[in-house]
Image 1 (cartoon, rainbow, N blue to C red):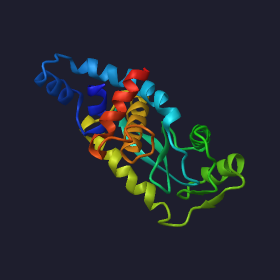
Image 2: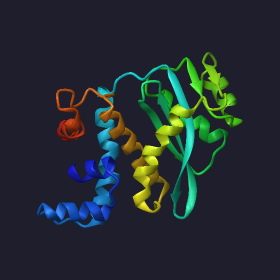
Image 3: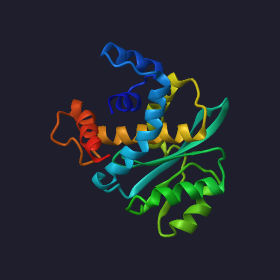
Image 4: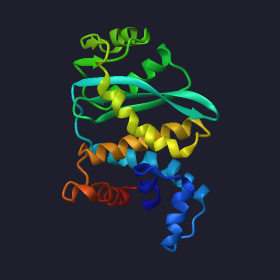
Length: 211
């Protein structure tokens, strides 16, 4: 749990985690750390799902990029008006099918938004008409600054990785980063009695018992 938490929380490489663990007398290969992150991150997210607070009703949706095996892929992301990351989807394509898949996933988390702000990609109006016909769609220029500025934190986390090998890894890491970000921002009923600086640590301790 310590290795996974460090990796998702800080801009560290797998080799950095290997070295930090060695300083604590724990000899673990960086490949093992990678396997831990891929294995336990989805389990932690699933275990924490009942503790997640209801999202807001105004969503800001946009795509950013990550490099996977030398190629750029898209990361669809949505945040609400309170800064909660609703969901993340890694996709090789930026098209109607990817947008539909993203919104279908995001809507499975609970509240349906009354307003959705996106960029001016042609796929969004079609998907919103299909899945959220009652929601107001905003695509004015600069209206999506909230999620665009939020991308910078994910990009800062991805930078030390120097590219990912598989789309699945991009999905796991970006979802795990969003998960930790949401804990830090108080969007889970986890670690609520802990000092804010220790909230993520306390949350992972609680979740370790659940998985």
